[in-house]
Length: 227
Image (cartoon, rainbow, N blue to C red; front, side, top):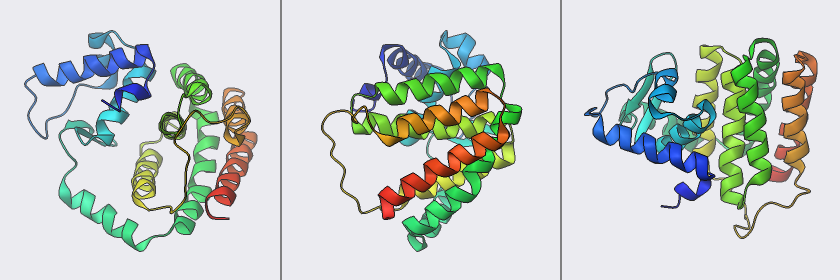
C-alpha cells in the first residue's frame, strides 16, 4: 500500500496495470516479462511510468532485472543477492560514494552523447517528479529513478549493469544518518537545481558539462552524507 503512494495518479495506473498483467499472464517464477516497448503498448502507459512501476516492483522483490537479458518474475536468485550482500557488508558509505563519483559522471557524459529522444523525455519528467515529491520517501524514490534514467540513457548495457550493481550495494549499505520523514523536501533543496543542470547538459549534448555537473552533484551529496 505504501509503495503506491510514491507515484502520481498516472503512475499509480501503470503500477496497477502492471500488477494485473503479471497476475493474469500465467508467468511462472523466473520467467521473463515482455520487453518494455511491448509492455508500453499492451498496458497503454508511458515508458516513464512503466519504468517507475518496474522499479517499485523490483524494490518489493516481485521482479528482478538482468541487463542484456530482461526482466524476470520473482525474487532475484540468491546467489546474486548473496554476492552483492557480501560486498555491501564489507563496504562503507565512503567507498560507495567513491565508486559513484568514478562511474556516474562518465554515465552522464555518455548519456549526453547517446540519449534518444525518449530518454530525454524520461529525464525531464523524472527531474520534475523529484521537485513535485510530497515526502522524503517519494523524493528518494524519484532521485533513484533519475540517476538510473541517466544510466539507461547512456545506451551502454555494460555501464548500466555496473550502475545497477553499485546501486544495489548502495541501498544495502547502512548510512547511519537521520532523515525527517514528515513533509516534502524544501524548495531550496540543493539537488533540485543540480539535477536540472545535469539534465540540461545532457539535452544540450554537452558531454563535458554533463560530466562536471554530475561530479559536483555527487560531491555535494558526499559532503552531506558523510562529511
